[in-house]
Amino acid sequence: MPGHEDFANLIPDVVGRFGLWPLGEPIPVTSGTLNWNFAVETDGGRKFVRRYRDDLLLDRIRGEHALVVWLADRGVPVPVPAQTPADESIIQMVGRWAVFDWVEGEVLPRGSLTPSQARTLGMAHGRIQSLLAGHPLRRRRDDADALGQGGVSRPAPAGADGRPAFRRGNLGAGGPGEAASAVGSHGRRSAQVVSVSAGPGASR
Image 1 (cartoon, rainbow, N blue to C red):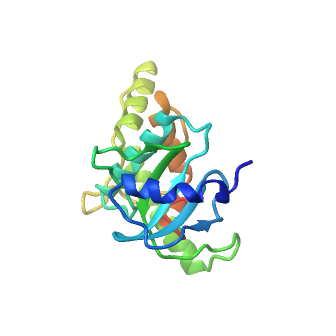
Image 2 (image 1 turned 45 degrees about the vertical axis):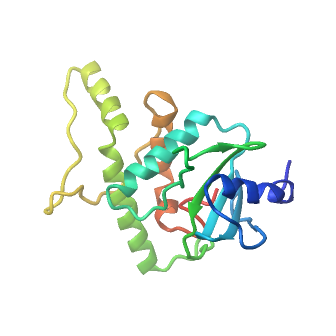
């Protein structure tokens, strides 16, 4: 299996495609398990550069990027993918790449959360789940399910301020197409999205 060292020499060209100039050597971010991630100092600040694994479909990546932007537009503090001058968030260069703003933080070992951290994480997870329940692809799936059962779908419950209420639970995967699958996978991993570590959202 390729290692970070197999892709590090491509980083200057990758960030250059996003209008950035590297100011130092790329540093591997090794906490991910599915992709190859790097921290890179640039003239536009520190960036998180991801080289996606080869078996990840392009539509899936695009759906994931669109979902992150959708959540950011609704107040979730997630870094959105950078855009090239051609308004693309993914480039092809010996594989597929994306660039995000760097997010400072720490990776907490499994089982080490304090009660306070667990409560905060649970509240954030519930908020994201409630938002995801209102995603157009999820609502489309719910509408289809309701019609099949002779019923009607209902909007996600709102809090006193009119915003989606906190709740616990798992959105689950499903729905049409790869973007719908991305909605489901982000539902399951939303805790990673907000407990950002060294890099954007999930460091996978």
